[in-house]
Length: 192
Image (tube, rainbow, N blue to C red; front, side, top):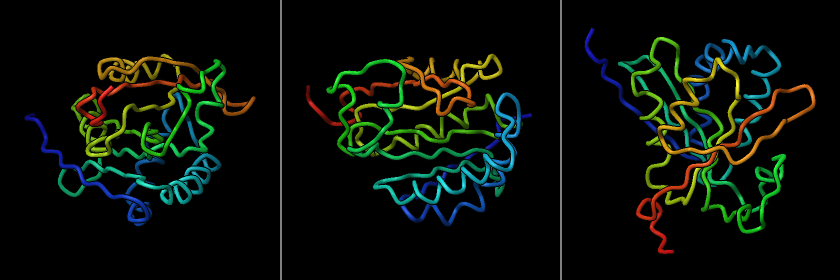
């Protein structure tokens, strides 16, 4: 079978909310798989969180499609100055490292591809589109360290991410690795 044609579309801010009917079926399908095994409560949490996060400045949603079929998505936003992202880590951070302006760091909240479309460049396309034109210095995301997530770890490592810490959202939830990608100066237009 030849390479399937993938196109990506993106929306910002409240335009993202209108796409929930496209994203939610993918979310339910992808995150129900091991190691995540998300159910009704996690799906409801996602819907509530998404409704709030689309209101953040420069929130962006990217959807990859093959024809009319949605096959993957990515969602994130630049971390606001009052973010708790870095405070949640187990590791100590410096004030300089954790300082956010609303333009410094893109937090990727969701990046997922349907099973039949993995390892075909869909994640890389959605990831690149998510970053395009935002002018951030760095990108962060949280991911599970489970062996079943090894392909995702390999992809992030190939893209240049490194682990900077870990967090446990709650006592009954698994640990996540906090990953960081520092972008080249040309990508964010800042001279250091």
